[in-house]
Amino acid sequence: NTKYIELLAERFNIPLDAKETTPFKTPKTRLYPGEITGESVVGLREQQAYRAGVGSINWLATTNRPDLSFAVSQLSRYISAPTPTHVMALQHVLRYVVATRAQAITYHRDPVICPAIRTAESPETVERNQLCGFCDADFANDVATRKSHTGYAFLLNHAAVDWKSSQQRLVASSSTESEYLALSHCVKTAQYLRHILAFVDLPQAAPTPIFEDNAACICLCNSDSHESRVKHLDIHLHNAREHVARGTIALHYVTTACQAADFLTKAVANALMARPMAILFGSAISAWDNGTKDMKRPEQRFLVPFAPLGSRAAPEAGAR
Image (cartoon, rainbow, N blue to C red):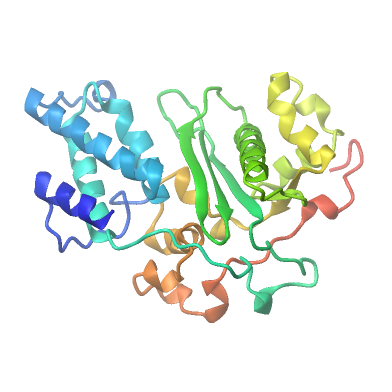
């Protein structure tokens, strides 16, 4: 992996001492087509270099670098007609890749949640060989189509084994609906991974925990009292509710600051990216925080405990 990135640096003339700490230069960075910005398409040689660069990063994003998934999903939309802004964004991503070439996914034998920070409400841990997932969505982040963005990741033994960052096909009418759509696809992947683990003699006896930062979405899956609010959705999108009822999936609330899938849906600052990166890569936050002060407290160097909303009583119909 390191050798491959060094070859990329040589091919695209990126210095090995690059210092970029995030895939995008500024938080909430969004790329737009030339028709909106008024920019012209770059020359043929630049177009070829742009396609080659995006393809090279895409290989990393799909194999061992989940932090590049959102950047690839943005850059790949303009493969056919890149503008100078898109080329500059690609160059920044390449410098970030070179600057973090030493980072690698590391799997551990110890439980995911540190026993020192368990709470009375959540005394259990994610055990060894137990699958768990994080799911998030960014509502209407595409200005042109107003479509939302889905991001989810699954961990096994303290590091990521599967992840995805993609634009939703439907236009959600609320943030809760966009989270519900993302969770539907996340649950499908969870079922697929459970089957694979069972095939390799690692059956998942307990429900697979999925961490979600939208309480309304969790309530929709744990109760059918809000049926009238989601009746316009396709039937197949309600599979998350079915699997929660079966007991194969358990939804747990996690704060947005500790949502490991947050950077799969949007460009975030380094201070907000350090903890999710440490969770997915199975590394210490110190490897990603770049000296950020709010990451120095010992209790924030581990995955924070979750609040199992699924164990709470479901709200009554009509309750606010």
